[in-house]
Image (cartoon, rainbow, N blue to C red):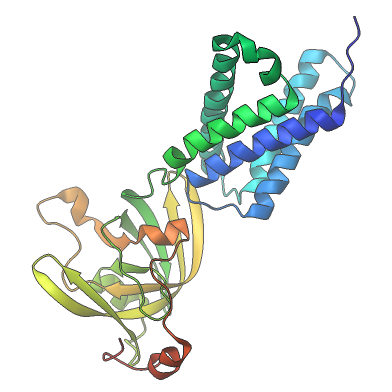
Length: 292
């Protein structure tokens, strides 16, 4: 019996399914991939499925080589992989979502015999994969980023400091002019980062339990790198402010080591609110504590 393989159909199916998987992996980590890189990664993974049919050798060896090259190439093309630990974490997420999507499609094929012919076709596979993607997407979004401990590397004017940080959904502070998220750091960390406190700063209005309202001094940090479960992501020009009180809790050793509270909006890339009118920015951009 002879089988006819259509390379374009094989590539299309794998490209679309890889696209679903890479989007899920990206949303469940620190969103380090760009749209262009995700598309490139999906294409590399699709090409890896065609590779076994283009090289000589035993079928098992060719299939294994295609899977290895396609999977590794797909992750390296889609994400800025920094080290083995990050690669293994991304691979873990990819295998998890591959198992979920593949298992769901097989379940549908067996549970609904009337749709078997459709679900085993090109558009059926892509459609079923899309349904699985829409189901998993809300669960993947966040991926432990809403609350949890991470490692933060802050680069200031005179020093680079590495601290334990808490990603806390309770921190919703934003810089009032740009609408960008603000992270809270320990006062001692801020003093270490700055050569000296500039006379000009942004006023960050806030309110908390026990104090109805107040003003924090906000400063632009040149660079911030967040590491969570081996996955790293760098940010440029991040707003930080020193908390009015110590961040750590002396009664909790784990909380005592926390020197920074990360606004989760920074990791999601979404803005809460937005910039004010342009004329306000011109008036208040270089003012001091009365800003806002």
